[in-house]
Length: 150
Image (cartoon, rainbow, N blue to C red; front, side):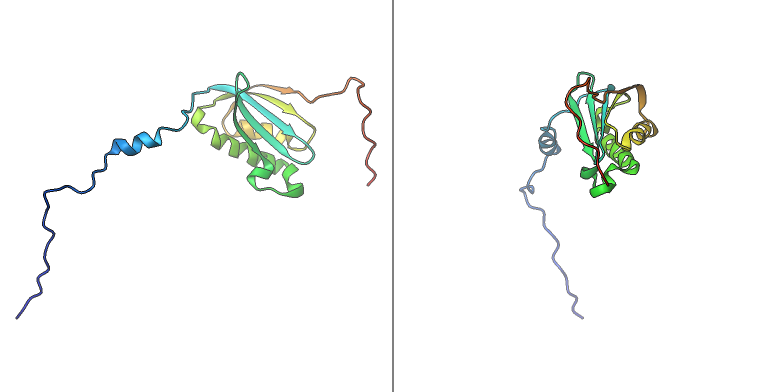
């Protein structure tokens, strides 16, 4: 009876291509370091057509910006309260590396996503320090456009 014997791998004196864990880690660390921001600002722009949420540090340097169109809503769905909640949740996922805990909320605009965005900030675990309405109001400046006739 003849048995098939397969040769086993014989160790060679030269090691295989050497991969050090530090070489890959050095390449991964080259990106911009994320700083720790505990307290910041949340700017909410709620227009009739869209909702935009911008998270910044105390001096106003932008950390993350997210809008309803960027999240995937199209057309009239961008200006809904549901879209505003999804926008806030997406923005907070992106800013999680900064360690943001407290925000001052600055709301601008007259869209329906105003309240929904503020409630979503609170519901997603942020501590709201203050809420300000910074919607620009004319002091009898330019003549407003005529009302729409639908």
